Image (cartoon, rainbow over all chains, first blue to last red):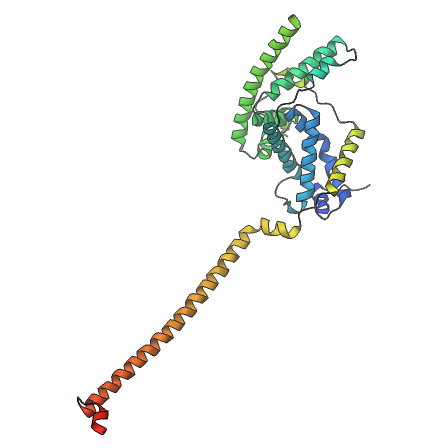
Length: 188
Length: 120
């Protein structure tokens, strides 16, 4: 049986310019990183761009890494910050809600409703302030504990719980609004 | 054992709509293609050298060393200056003392007249 190298070992080899170790390291975290970024940004293309930037940062700064925190914690922190920076700089792109509607393939009614609900949640989530959205993504979608999420966001546990509470309140309001909006569309 | 789910004091159960927001999994070919792209891009980017990072990471060590060097140089300069000044003052005082002693001697031996007037 081949023993799997730890993230730290791979990072040390990456710091010495070992591209095979680098490939293995980013391959491990890519899918989850892209998912987190997609939920933060609302679309896959920007999420992949953010993940690419993050991975290049790992390559460049590998020798500076100090094992004070888990590598994955640091990585997802960089991803979240890159998403927040990107949100500030880029004008929100049209989400693929239009793609869903203009999809030429015929879809069953149930699936259509499911897609519409998914799009509504995505819109409601995107309307949250950045840090509140990050709290929901980590806590609900990534199923991380409050303590791990707080560590990742570099805030205290109490501050994270407050952030999550406000996020939940706002998200509830946004979801109700989105539902009303959808009902109005389907009713017309 | 406390699971991450149980650890969360705020649950989302009354927002069951959230689960409908699905993010599609990345197909393996797409994932491989993205990894290839990233590795290719990385091979064109230089890595941060270890020495640079050493100084940046240990700036807390470099600062006191620099401060010590400055203090040492200042200390040496001031010390050297004082020594020179002290030596100069000592010579000046010695000269002054010797000159006073000579005058006193002349006064005692030759009175108000200078030794030149007495001898010549």
